[in-house]
Figure (cartoon, rainbow, N blue to C red):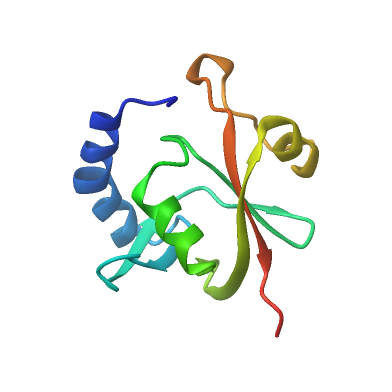
Length: 124
């Protein structure tokens, strides 16, 4: 796992609520796999051909990632628009970097991020 789990807990309880209020970050809405509760998670969302790519800073074991994989879908709120996403899958660095535009900044190597989540635009 690239970032320590304890930092994720701090991020979830302190920084995410601030980011949600500011509404400048894309927000992924997903449903809890056990509880059925709707969650909103701010994050970086990178448009790629046919969908979006998300950097898994805390790895694929994060709750939000497991929720999206279990549901098979999520909604991304970006720039005042709601985008339905489907077919989530964890991809490696090579696939992720080949999908990203050249001008998108890659995560620093020292963070050791090796997993990314790719989702397709849901059919209309």
